[in-house]
Image 1 (spheres, helix red, strand yellow):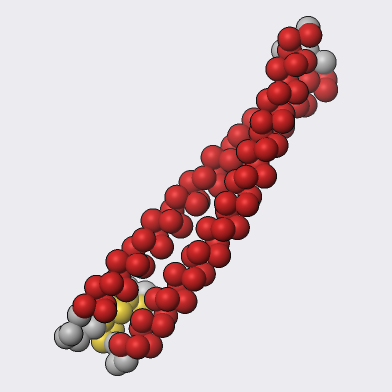
Image 2 (cartoon, helix red, strand yellow; image 1 turned 45 degrees about the vertical axis):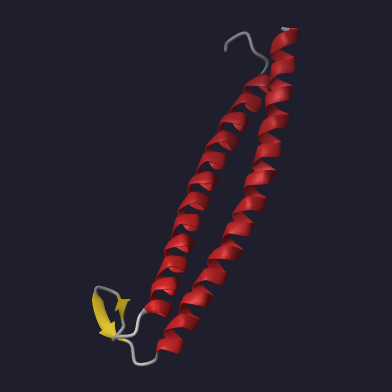
Length: 113
C-alpha cells in the first residue's frame, strides 16, 4: 500500500466502510424479515385459536381481554416492520450502487498502476 496514491488509499478505505455498512444493513433486514414472519405466524395462530389468549409484556405473560385488540396490535407491528424493511431495502440498494461504483473506480486505478 506504500506505492498507492493517497486518493486510492482513501477510496479503498471508503470501499471497506461501505462493505461493512452493506453487511450490517443486510443483517438488519434479515432480522426484520424473520420478525415479520413470526408476527404473521402469530396472527395466523391467534385467528385459529378459540381459548384464552395471553400476550407477552416484558418477562410476563398476561391474559389478553380482547382478541380483536391483540390482532390489531399484531397487524400494526407487521405494518411497521414492513415499512422498516422497505427503508432497509432502499438503503441497501444505495449502498450496493456505491459499492459497485467504488469497486470499479479502484479496479481502474489499480489497473493503471
